[in-house]
Amino acid sequence: MASFDIVSKVDGQTLDNAINAAIKEVANRYDFRGSKTEIELQKKESKIIVVTEDSMKLGQIEDLIRQKLSKQGIDPRVADFGKEEYASGNMIRKEIVIKQGIDKEMAKKVVKQIKDLKLKVEPAIMEDQVRVSAKKIDDLQEVINALRGSELEIPMQFINMK
Image 1 (spheres, rainbow, N blue to C red):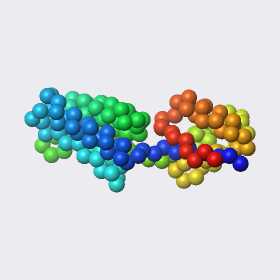
Image 2 (image 1 turned 120 degrees about the horizontal axis):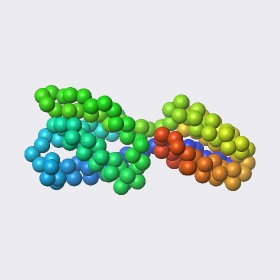
Image 3 (image 1 turned 90 degrees about the horizontal axis):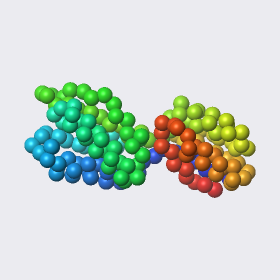
Image 4 (image 1 turned 90 degrees about the vertical axis):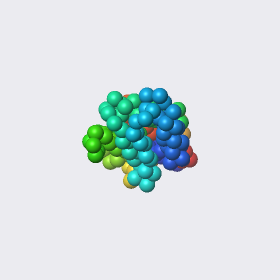
């Protein structure tokens, strides 16, 4: 029986490259010269900490991070840009969480979307991924094409095609 897994993961090294490129650009840009702007990647917690002086610079840094992520081949939807909070003095701090894995609610949406295709496939939720099994590989390829064209809020990768 043929199968594949649907996952939502980000390669740590690729993420590190994107954030390092963003840090270099902030250091070289004229409008950030002399500002106290810091961008830090915390790999273990999968989050990016941004500290800067005002909300305008914070918006520019967010756009820059989105741009660098997409240049590295990472879907910018993996970044969850939370609320900004005020740090000491007049500084603004923001935590950008990198989403890893498919949570239960999203997995249920993916399974429902697969079942709505009315193909002879069996989707199953397995921790932070969804496994799809079928007798025909053509049915699995139809599922992949349908999910690529869907409007789900998470980026998906299709791995372990057997």
